[in-house]
Length: 73
Length: 252
Image (cartoon, rainbow over the protein chains, first blue to last red):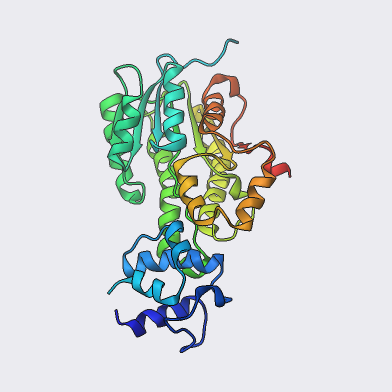
């Protein structure tokens, strides 16, 4: 998956317009990144990336880039 | 009437972790032989080792593959003879926003939590597979069947389906001396609950749920004790009921 494809997945999940997210954005600055979005992220990591994401790992994410890196190749 | 005892009884318990493990141990300690079903071999072995007596058995069963269940029940009947009861403790406690709850996910939860229950009841309630003097069935439902929990549509719907089914099954199977009931646990300290909490323990909703359960969190033994009562003759006039074991949550 390319960086662009991963960003589109996250934008869809957060119901954001295309082009809203950039890797350097702080997650805390994104209103749509709420507790419900975090639950969705767990499912997205599992189904789209084959990765198990724990609550602890979610708490360690600071920027969009952290999430993109966790999504893998 | 004396206390509850199950000497000479044979019970099928599906789900060998959490509430299932505790239920198997309690029913066994009251004299019953236990036939365990689980998809997880480690759970099966651990729980089997904790049981006393030589007539306990364990069978691997994939509850998400409902079509495969009949074969397992037939094997149990052939190898062990008629059973006196069945407790369905299998369940997945899925937390998932609606946005991510597509049909294949909903179906998987319904298969494991609900359709497998009905299928096992169907396969066990055939002449020769249950004690014609009486069989008792208990499904582990959830208080969530009565409540609105966001992100738990599949889970709560599967438990609501179970509650509706037990009323129908109770009436249909009464002529066969089969009683069918459910217990609805509130928040209970099990591995399943701990996984869910890992994702939402700091959420306001989780804190609110705990606050509503004003007697505190249930332990698996609290649920198992109620199951033992429903499996015993002490509850002989109870069928088609769903008993809440919820630390008061439903009343708050």
